[in-house]
Image (cartoon, rainbow, N blue to C red):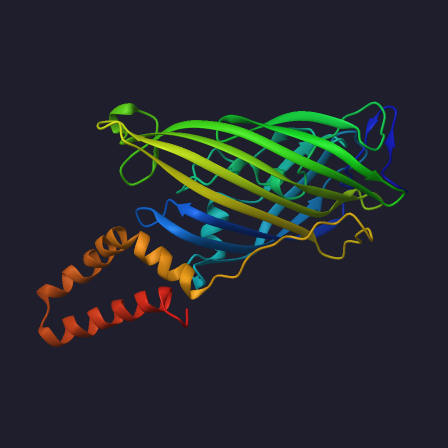
Length: 327
């Protein structure tokens, strides 16, 4: 039975009990990153998200999701962050939502991520994977538009959606988003609540655009592609000096086994990480990297000369593996 858009409301999603879908999510962050004291580079993450339908004879849909595979790389070098570490911040989560995509309940914990990245919120993981939009209209016509808001990192994110095509098998919706964030951070680039603990004030503006493809018979997302641009004005509280940070984020979500329409699918363009990216990142963040590596090398001074040189050589080799030609 097709999940249809009818006069009673727009039916995008279905989550019958016993159904399971696996989604792949590739997220790429290119620009300023709040890691190792601040880096300019490229972070690439790949993961698999399993979604179990839990709906049983109710108009309110229910589903649970969890990350089942994960890897992450910075400037092409794999980072030692495993699946269990990610599940700590993104545990198995159950949500309730309408067939139109309005999320009404979640049991996701109130956790603060170690770093703040635009468009990423521990409580909003379903929003960027399998329930990315809502479209609650009384009629369904091509070129019809709708707006809604969701809260990310404590601030509203405004979505503007447009129904680009509607066939018996697929609905294709274009999406534009916008958000403004104001927050405080300390010298380590961690978000803080009190100004007495803050080093800078940050005002960030996020805009993004993309496309969502719904496979109507499955009542599930087939593909999501979003590209977001964030520009932040960072003002030093003591000196008043302001600098700008920029970050481009690309999210590509694909449901395994999904059928895509022959036309209307946009392709994500994720550029490869080159040696010049690594050199650029290393040059831009040399002070932060030097501080980190000095903390590792400093204890060696208390050792005998041979052991100290051996350890120092291992740390230098590890650094080269992160930024060198073979990384």
